[in-house]
Image (tube, rainbow, N blue to C red; front, side):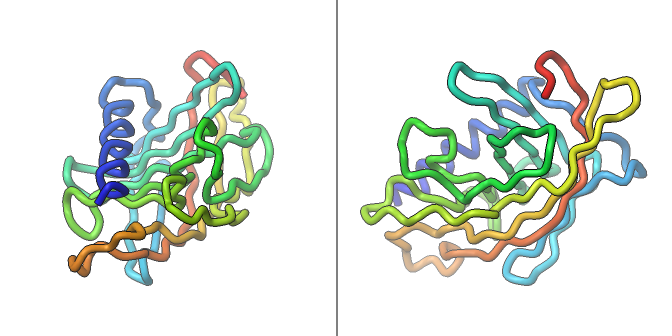
Length: 193
């Protein structure tokens, strides 16, 4: 239960970032930008209008985030990459060190399979810490647009989001295999990579 509470708080924080205008929308419906997923084999696709990105530079690290999700309460996804976004990279599912940005995972799935649930692909608070697994998110290409005002980023994800070590009797609270691909446009507004 503690894990679900923390995951829900993280999901709310992610949504707050989007609502506060700190992100860039990926473009129009016919732009060719997308996030396509399968969750335990069930397809879930997000149109370009439902995708936004965010890039922030901190004292000790930088974070690139991809947000995918439509209406409030509907399924949404947050991807967090801390690698150099100007080139291909691989991001693990998490990091066991509490001060590090991937302590609660690099992939977060919210409001799936029902509103109010949130799952991350790493749980730094587990009693027995798991070893991080590489290649949860792979950036295959990061190409500048002419004029240097944006980059087109494509990649894949292949991970498992965790239901928590204290799973309840709710059949929706379980581990989910999440696989997919994405192609997004990040328009620079401030920090560049």
